[in-house]
Image (tube, rainbow, N blue to C red):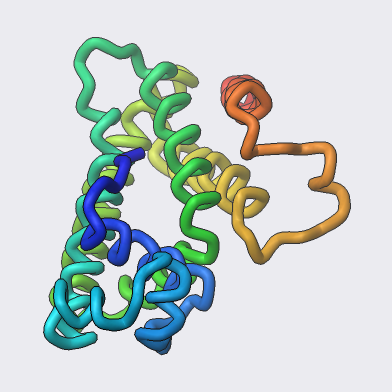
Length: 196
């Protein structure tokens, strides 16, 4: 995941974090300043209005989102490696931006907004790539089975990684730990390979 060096990037990162955590864009500039460790004047300096800041935050979200899925086009990796890396990146992103899936679903539902149309189109394109990889991994060319497996894979990582899921049986599953996360992802893929 991208490291944020400048104050402006840090403000955008923490804005995305808070919006993801709340699942809504009604985050105050004071909340953002506190989370970013800056004063309100710094936010006003880098962004003239909250609307401009939110627009730049949407651009950051799209950039981050695309980076997560870039692995699907890595020609050096095999199908299973691509899925493994993708799932690990999604878990890391979901942990870093809790509740981001709520925001993503809201944006997808808003077909009138530029970002909503972009996210909807992008998810459909990425879904085709994921299903093609799943077909390679499982050897099953059935489109419906590939779609089922895609939902199972993505649900099995987003649900436990989501901040809103504080169910006690997840206490033994520490997805913040890279080794545990990688082990979990490999296990999920093994399960999928057995479902042909």
